[in-house]
Length: 501
Image 1 (cartoon, rainbow, N blue to C red):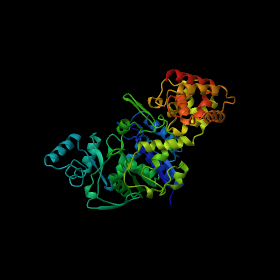
Image 2 (image 1 turned 90 degrees about the horizontal axis):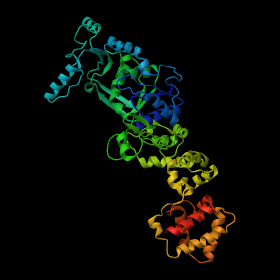
Image 3 (image 1 turned 30 degrees about the horizontal axis):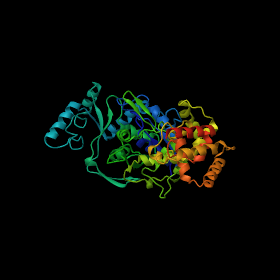
Image 4 (image 1 turned 90 degrees about the vertical axis):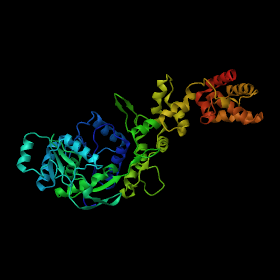
């Protein structure tokens, strides 16, 4: 690419960052890395009515946690700063005025009441009111009143907006990297508001001006912005600027049914749709981090929602994703969110963690339950159970019997407890009492020799043995459990089972 790649993620601080927004940020980040470019974050806070305290900090923290921090943002390498739109508001007016001067925009003085009345008139005739080329010269605008009158009304403090003057009878032939060639008829477009009398620009103007001044080379954003593409291209043209290249990403869809993935879907099906937990007076929305997901797993999962590298590979490091990422391989169709696949990715990344790190993460859960266990033992327990876990939070359920004797026994498994079983378990206790080196391999060798010599039948001993120690027919290698809980505890549990079952 001839000029430096500069891409941005430009969220509004109106609440927590949705997972769809995270994927947009990720694809921008990967594209920048792939082309040796810059990924920057701009905070689009021009709509002060929707501003939510803490949302900006949340966005920053989420991107940091995911490992996709921007190179430039508020307070960091502000090459084209400020990076917060509310701090740039003084510069937008001059560009709005420029459009007026060029004849590409106009003042509109219509009150909300007048526009509402017009909408009702149109509805009564079975039509839809659109503020556009067909009626703009019949409305209360600077297109039909003199410049002097316009200036007088502005000076008098009358409410106004500046609207874009959409060209008439033109077919726009535009190109989207993902969607290919797209046609738009300008006569079907409305004259969007660009600037308000409160001194604040709308998204459309601020976005274009900032992307130009910050030298954005590619705009990679969600497909909900596709209808705005013709306006944005026309604005670039009106200013005499080169437009960036556009790529509109497909939606992330509900797991079941149609439509965009929402917080409600997550609440209903029990999975997070936000990277981090979000607290409000109404309650707490769960986050990937607090639910025990590894950031690498979230990134990997999201990268494959709507993109693949053309192979069957599913597990990618961030570096591999950056190396292989190609916007031309992003799908046009929406990508269905699969909560089970989401967990599968976390399972894969959990297996990649060291047993030592997992033991450190598991330790607070164990200590919280008032159980004192040495770190070396905890590492060994983690090693024996991690293969069956998706999250560290699963460890307790998978390993509780290492720490606490069973208080009940699985009914189905207890059917294997026959009339002769208590006697066999008593014999087993005698065998275990005489084991010297209490290691998994040695215990297994001695117990199986006893079973074989006495022609007992493996299942008659092993299943009741496991049931006595665990309370169910589950868990890792039985003799690993025996070694880890120790001789004394093993015999205690066998005696309890004999007395209880």
